[in-house]
Length: 238
Image (cartoon, rainbow, N blue to C red; front, side, top):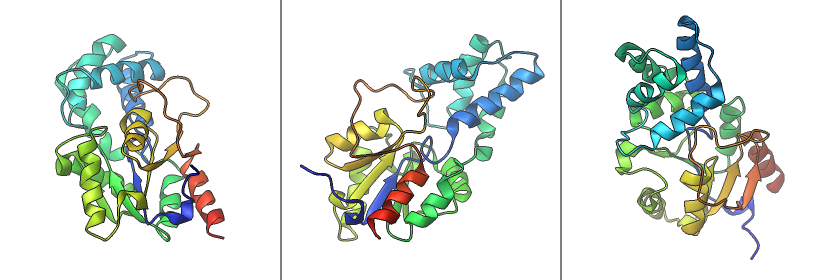
């Protein structure tokens, strides 16, 4: 069966951290600053690997407050001081995380056609900073504080479905867009949504700071940037 054309959707739902906000750069920039002050040579990809493992331990907490705990786990592995001050500093760098260079412009363009919905495993305090960095483009937003659960839990998606149903739509009216195969692309396929994979790590090996999926899901749409999606929408509507 052929996929729905981009012009057929009323909504685009977005993962935020990793798709729109460059969390890998945010994490490694903060760690590099601490490393430099302590005369430590830091490998960014190695640091992301330790981060990924720490984030999926049994005692994981809500993100990004969990970065305090994560720092305590990864600092000794990276040769960094595992003190409370630097752990708090690691978390407190979150408001300075930058959007990908193409994100805000692409969202502003897409907003002219669709209602945009943010779906993030981040807490509301962090999302408020991310939303401001992105130009506050969202029609609605769902954070872990709102849903009480994290993607890839289908219950997170079900709350979004209920929201659009309140506006006279269905999940078939949503294009779900994300970079994480594990958190978003696989589960959106299982839930019968049309999805769009933004492959932010194209040209790089591995999964960086994001957990590796049990299996790869071929997306309905695939771009290596948000700019690519926005351009495709412009073409589809011309």
